[in-house]
Length: 97
Length: 347
Image (tube, rainbow over all chains, first blue to last red; front, side, top):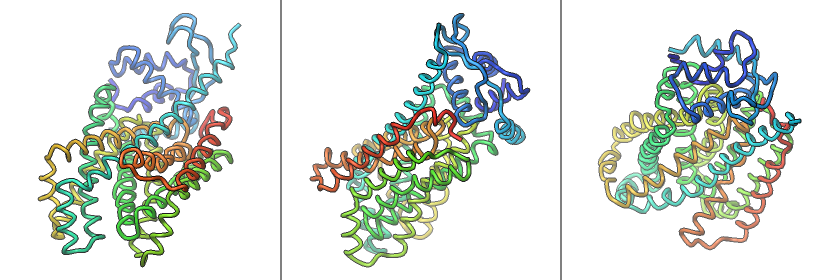
């Protein structure tokens, strides 16, 4: 169970610098928060989209979801955390209660 | 063969459209809020309160004191409306987590509540009370300039020439709508420096709020962040402002307990829902299209407020409203038609 806000937790999952498909990070975060269902999944995906829009994570690859890993027929994004994201994350995790 | 780049571009376009849609919702709801926001001034107990304070301290002070009480009560219903909203979204757990993360998240919403609440709203009422309503409206319409400049300098947010032009045309539209009123207000009498300070507070308060809140929204959810911002604003009114006015001898608490009358409560519920969701939409637009564009489109509230008062109060529009409205719409299209790939990243 994570005590961090969702966006911070998503960045924390990626802080090792490895590349993550959106559904991998989302699945991990859903487990951390005990979240279930499509709405929670889409909410977390929106968090990732917002993190990418401000440049805290960046897209490195994409493919169509043929197997239904996230949502069949939709576009899957692979992200990696950026230096800006790491800097904000270190600030965030240092002070989070 | 699936064209991945075309799919990516379409998905990206959806994000931008959603951002503009939220900003437009904000403008419409802000405009509708002017209905309960205006009506409530004519209801009990505020009429009696205004008259009592005015008899001892003058009209301008009566307006300020009454405004603080109305704004505090408005914040109560906004907080309640947002409890329903965040409950439906299943966000209570996220709210606790975000509130606890004070340094990275909630401190920014606390600062945002100071700039958006006491600075901007009080400033707006000061401008209204000591100069006039049209002056206050025009001053407030300038806030996206402050917001986008600050977001650009502080966050490195991209403001394209097209976005900047759109913001300026919308502001020009707003000034055209209220401009005639400002001239007659300035000609009507002496312009108190308090009114000018109030205008400056209104112009800067909401702009600074947007940039400050956006810092928190980097790592927080907009629905949750906005709720924390309003809880914080409510605390400022209830713990600091109202007791301060009571100590100064103004009967704010006496009148606060007299609001439990059907029509007054109904208006505050209406105000809470419209203001709450206008603000939710405002905050939701920032991470999607940036502070500058979000505030620029939300600035259309001036036009929607005029439309609301025409529809619900039967005010006859002047020709300047039509010209200003046309400029507002033109400014919006300048922004909407921006190449969406320019907005792939906002910074």
